[in-house]
Image 1 (tube, one colour):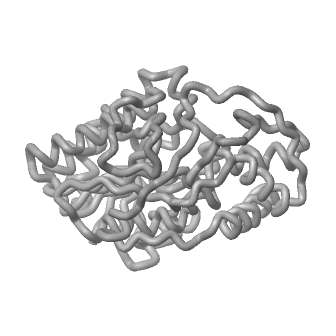
Image 2 (spheres, helix red, strand yellow):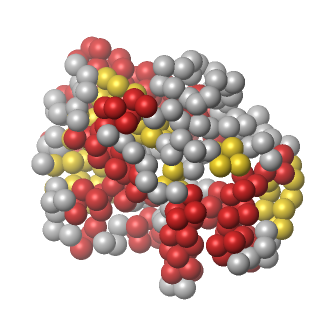
Length: 318
């Protein structure tokens, strides 16, 4: 079968590409190598895939209708994992128009061509950020998600709504995967594990909102996320939303302590108030994903951070 992975050179996308290739699929990877962070890192993410005869890289933007039309006509993918997006709640405040253009407009282009191609299944990457600030924990897929705290979260919610509309109008089978704080090798440099470790190694201070106390994140290791996405791709649904998280929130101060133990470096901590974009907790109820996708996270935070640290050391010694 032929799979299209948008955002293929990114953190999650490149891992998905590698896993699909490993099981013998034909994979078309689409990426525009935007300079949100160093594009050379993204190209390294695909180094293994580019050696594989089953992989084809298409460099292009999901907002470019001509490129996407040509891609679907040429390769005729039967399954689509739409991961491409502008990431991050806080950066979205400075440029909400860009986030709307990519995360909503670009998704619309992908949905339109996917329905024209009559794909067998499309998995849309979403985020725990759509839940906003809520007193109901853990987060369930049927919770209210109409009070996002950032333009990023709002655009991802809008993409979910568009996906439902396309299913309702055209019958396109779509599963929405809401990711919870993904971490691991190839993680983006603006994400907490990489950012904290980088500063600790360099002897620079790290910022902990509220001192890291009473601030919890549902850290989920990349391999567990990929297993959930692949199981979703393999099990077409009419329209479903799934939480993909570890369901064991970690207090941020404990997260830093674990990094100190694993790396051997001390963290210099600066405390700041919690920004308006950040909820005090993310916590996935994965009952639905367990029942319908056999989703069972297996990598504990201690093991996952050990693996991340090993990758980081190899990365900086390149």
